[in-house]
Image (cartoon, rainbow, N blue to C red; front, side, top):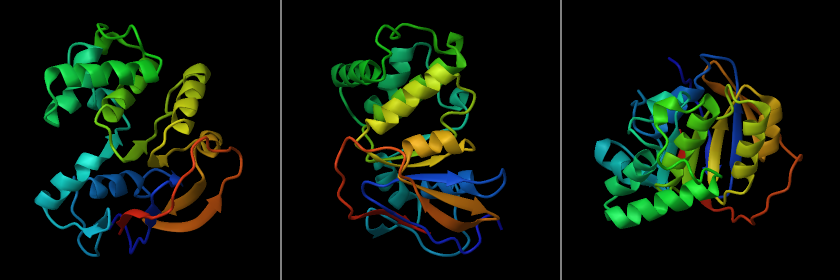
Length: 220
């Protein structure tokens, strides 16, 4: 059993960090939220509604964006623009709308001019930012970020930190880097052996956007 009677509530406006050793259940938790794995017991509510089965997850996961730990698992189109426009197209946007959303997302992330770059030829940091662009282009309400700073140089890490602090979105962020987590989250939870042991409020940065605090997503 990877998750053991885990109980976690996540509310609108929260920016939460999950810290813990490999094998503690962090990525498994993300995959359960997305419906990629099915829990053996317990219940989960997303956006105030119980979810149970593929149909429920298909509806709720349109509002949740998952950034995979490995950017190569997220990028598969020949060019950056095609990759970023793919999500909006799958959400029934017209080609013109999808391309416009993709362009705006790339500009927001400081990637203007990357449109025709070949994805597999990008550097590791560039792939990470383009991967984030593919998620943001789907206009989610919640982000699940699995080791977003892993392998980044200091310059790209600072850029990513700035992007996250300027997002008016709720997110849960997995990281082994406590300093990066302190820069980008409001609170940090320690996860070990499938359980959450403590919660540590973070006071190292101020948010640019005001947040409301209504219950938003899951309870597992």
